[in-house]
Length: 258
Image (tube, rainbow, N blue to C red; front, top):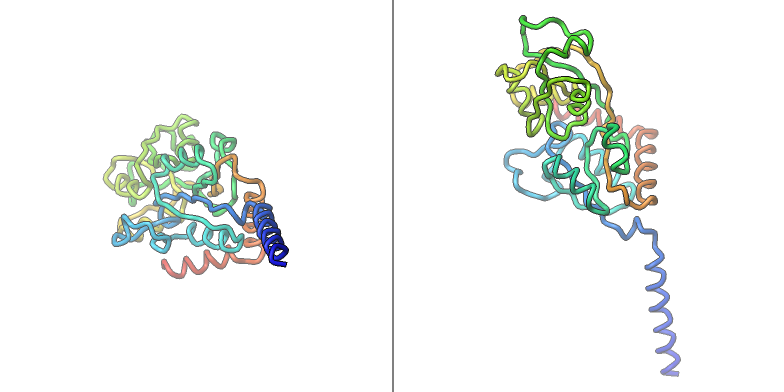
């Protein structure tokens, strides 16, 4: 009898191990999520710099991604790194993703995508009350001028490919000060970022000269990411658009920042 009970116990232990091994990979895999400071999508307050707690990271993209991961039931860690380093890490490391990244022809084949996390409109901005520059009505009108962007920006790469003289800052928040200090002549950025950076930095901002592009800010993942995880994340994101969750996040965020 004793040996029968021991044999039965061993059988159930083996069965439990086997069942665990067969659990869907998305329940057993913790994703390493990377992001970078890009207000208002991702930002830290001064008192929070240097910390690594998930609650210390704020912004519109953080709120969207947090809800996606929560609904999908996939555990994750979140770390802030410079965007260029983050892209290199994501391309090299399994189960790693970075957001928010603008999809571009160059990046498209290098990563697997959860998209769109945020849809944004890009425009040229010039120094407020500037009278030395003609009105920018087409992309051709902007070609003679030095345009500010930031390292890792898909929009900066796009303008570079069109022959624009692009000057890259380490992050987008520096570009408004450069614009007002006459170190660049135009700032190419999305409208929401421009308005937010102007508001929090108390730097004047001119009106958008030309809204010339719509980008899909997305989460770029290592190309070897499990297809089950990728499908689960994209299905969850689509459901959030359908049920109004994305719109609700945008409304609540706008109310907090205005």
